[in-house]
Length: 247
Image 1 (spheres, helix red, strand yellow):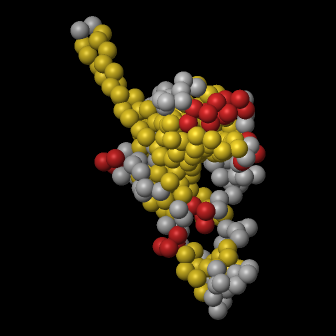
Image 2: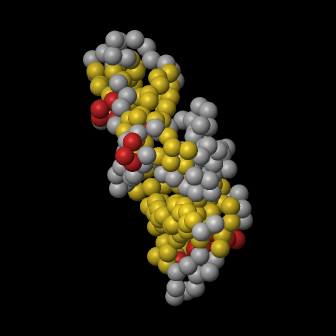
């Protein structure tokens, strides 16, 4: 299970943004499919017709029936499998295709839903990526003239305040911008302000995911064996923390 139960997702906000979901408890192995459950029983769907409040739509199935929970199975590409290893990190990108999934009927004020989700072990698009979570710790090795340092965030997706123990290393640069409790800064100054906040502070970072594989070879009894470990980090371009984080 990746998401906490009853997670509210604003799909409109994800049109130009990707959200990082993190889970530390997935068993190691190779996965062939992903199961996604969507609950439309309390969905708030608004069509923007230019008016102040828009038009509220009722979600229905292909046969016109009211919608509750829908389960989708996304089959993964066998030639680009999603594998989870011990002490490693793996990526699985999910893309909810809004245009292919929804048909608006303004006269009936309904939205016919036929959900379509694409899944891939490689990044699906080049959207800006957001990771939101509690600040774990900061390593400040940067100076006024050189970049450096890092900080670690847990992964609390969307608007949730509780989640798994999954965490990700964030790599800022000397041009990374910060807004900490309403005060703007860049580079080493911003990283220092972040370090002063302490662990547990709600933080949001925008940037891109960066993955790299490293191969380790060990010899036992004259036989060589190799293992591949994946390292996933996050290159941050903007960081919000404390009172600067929405909610």
